[in-house]
Image (cartoon, rainbow, N blue to C red; front, side, top):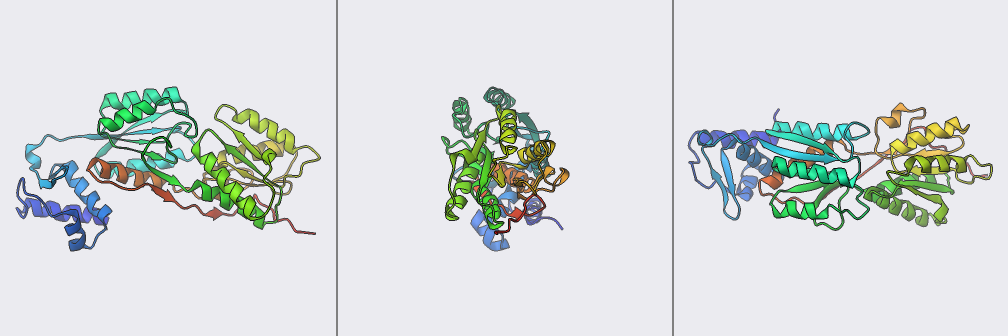
Length: 357
């Protein structure tokens, strides 16, 4: 069975072809269509977006949506630019898959770019997208917790009327739509799970050049304070894109010392948790017998490593599909609010319960 927005698009298309609505005639408002078909505004906008893309309708800002004649209009192939920090690994292929499925189903093509979390590469991607004349942009920001020298490009894109939204994080200096996971809640749930399992000496290992790491740290601190445990600066270990490997090496050296008190670790994501577990095992420690670890993002690494990893959910494909729906709505004149997915804990084998003596 077709989705509701496709059913509505089919119905309106049939009415236009039957002459119920004639060329240059204003169709019923979104509110009227909502009430008539008992659908949400988002569903109505999706249906209208399909017909606009096909040429059956045209939107005039401040006036309404009018009937067009598809046979009189040249076919317009619309393109959405997608800029991600990485494309080929971790959770990113699943996000792209969701984007691609939704965009292609509505007649849009995809132009991909990757920044490798580097501002210079981000700037080149933005220039290329603008030169290609994309109709909209979906962007995962680069080093979102640092000052970005490319902010002027985003202002220019907005001034040109090209809609854009951001995934996973956003630039706090810009007023921009974003689709994210509630990272504060992710950090809180991960930390609280260790506390509930009897851990009192908990270390946070987080990436600090991205906004997600900042908010996961906020959740970590909140859970520690609520449990009336000490917030120790030495137990908040941070790294950047460039310092990750050295930070891991130093942390493993510290955790293998006989005087170690840490029993539980909240990792920024599954990727660094996976690498940490590998290095700890090589150093002679056992997870979770010696150290318990919680990851984040429920990636393939969470079940593909040496120890099935307790982690937090990330919607991936659903996020991609929603981003595609949002950007198409924005192209068609819609205005949708930022959206935050709420994470939940997935328990596996990487956390050991500590029994109080």
